[in-house]
Image (cartoon, one colour):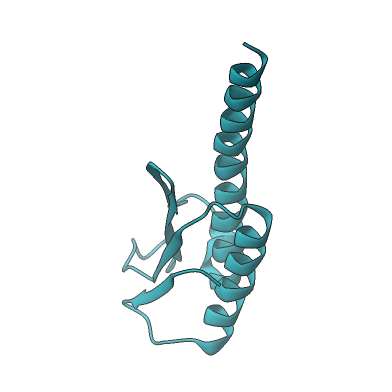
Length: 115
């Protein structure tokens, strides 16, 4: 696993959440080998009392020449009271963004090779 940094804010450390993040990050770097590093911040900020405490997961994914930032903040999604669902959704979004960048780079390289 390339450079993975995990931070917990406003919440105690959870081995289960860390394990889930490591698995998801490992799968992402196995799929896209040009990823240089991943920084994950897991937080449980104090939200408005009628919405409960919703998890916030943000990711920074390093790629050559750019950084992909995922700030997955769903204040309207009550299922994000479960930290594991918030982690899953953040990595799903990261997967889509990295795939889009990867596909754009591959297409650009293909077009350059044709010329």
